[in-house]
Image (cartoon, rainbow, N blue to C red; front, side, top):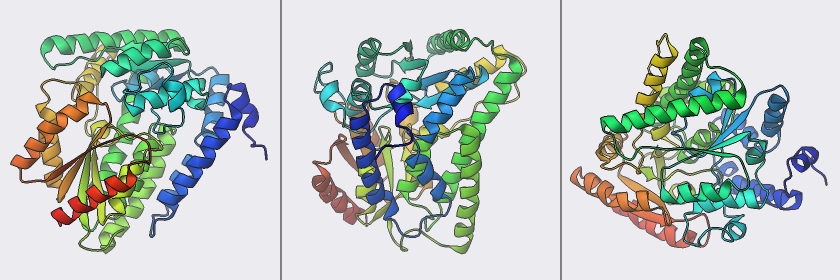
Length: 424
């Protein structure tokens, strides 16, 4: 049976048969992991709807916006300042992919020992599976790792790519470099959109993105309650969808969900039985539909109450200072906020160690699971420093390295179950 969006997808040059297969697998996977949960919040129905329409209604919204003259900017990293795009009248969407369905195509141009995230977004492009990629007027890469840097060179053969250089240290000269990159990006966005960024537009954009961060900060405060009122899987989904959904609508809907959460917290109602082991995830980002590890953890007698990752607190912890009156002053505020990101690309990265320990203590977790994608050198190597910092704080850690395949699920489940028992 044909899909009502087939004509739109065909116009975007998707492989309709392969794309239908992806949606079918995604739907079953989502049902098994999310819809099987008991006691979910009513507010999660909106997230279920967004995910079900993520390649349909949301893409139509983007196409309608493009028809009205707006430009769509795709990104792979939280270092790309969305405030700049919004201030120029553009729309920013995340492009990271968390499935291995396009792996065979990706491995025709990438080494097999490339991290799964890179192979996934390249594979989605080469397999013609992602309507977000095909909707973009510009795709913005960044130099957070060597694998990405070189992959963007290949990706640029197929899509328009612009690359921002991310400093690798946090000295004064590194801030100068980063400010020059933000200004260069601002000029590029103004060129693409045809709109000059004004002080009023940038002020509004800063406030809009800060409001989305604030509602996610509120969500994190509420989920920290004992007993926790929402599953880690559901919070991960909320954070993932924040990169795709309209920011005003998303902020409003998550505000409503937080109101519902507050009622649960007041009544002492938890999503899991009292005494369930509280764990925290740390490390690499988890893009849709990479829900494997949280599902394993939460089906092994534990609950995830925090994520120290780019799809988690690293993305929402800091706000851009508001109140600026000039474009130059607000650009400085943006530069300062984004320089506080504690990505594993930085050396040294003592900020991340301190943030992980502080977060684990605040959430009263029994342990931390450090997650790294296979062949992700920055996070895999930094696991040593993380474990040392947590050990000094008396907090146990389990290091897991995996990819997007399901082949190691039973092995991972055995290790996680043992860790949960040990922390118990």
